[in-house]
Amino acid sequence: MIELIILGFLSYNNPLTLYDIKKGMERSTEYFASTSQGAIHPALVKLEKNGYITSKEEVKNNRTKKLYRITDSGRERFSMLMRQDLGFDKYKSTQLLKMLFFNELTKEERLESINLHIKNFKNMQKDLVNIREEGNLRLEEMGVSLENHRPAKYENDALAFGLAYTSFVIKWFEDYFIRIEEES
Image (cartoon, rainbow, N blue to C red; front, top):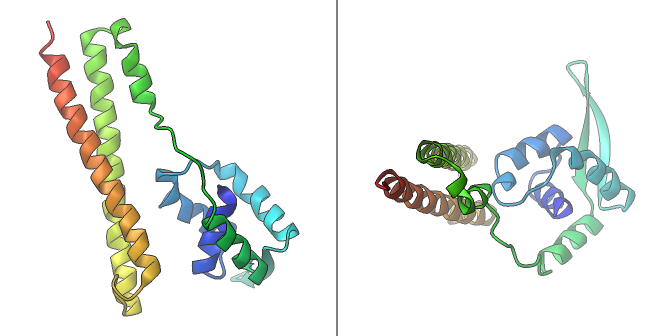
């Protein structure tokens, strides 16, 4: 999965540093694909060894940065990965796991757990809104729109799904909170 993500970022944004890739993942893919931040550097080394990317050190303001670029064979690899079935995602939720055993908690503890889950999803929703707004500003600065910039259009589709999903989860757990609150 991390190979697909890195090659994808590099195919749209040449060149990038490890830091750029890490920040890009934090602001996008971490919401729907779990990858360890510590796995980025080893993945970059492997991708470079396989000839899918190249790196070049550049000194700017007395700081050395390593910039990564995708190669033609990296673009072919990315294209192949994009056409593969990535497999079925089983829905995993630590909150649902905890709910399975809610009987072990007091009513107050159950309510606190639900409230924390709602708070976390509201924070995620705010992050997604901020990401969308930042993306719209970047498009505006580039003088393009979602309609004529295909990568941004599809990124926005993923954001729209994330926003709809967070809205659903928040609403469902707010209703669940009321149900638990009304229990005797």
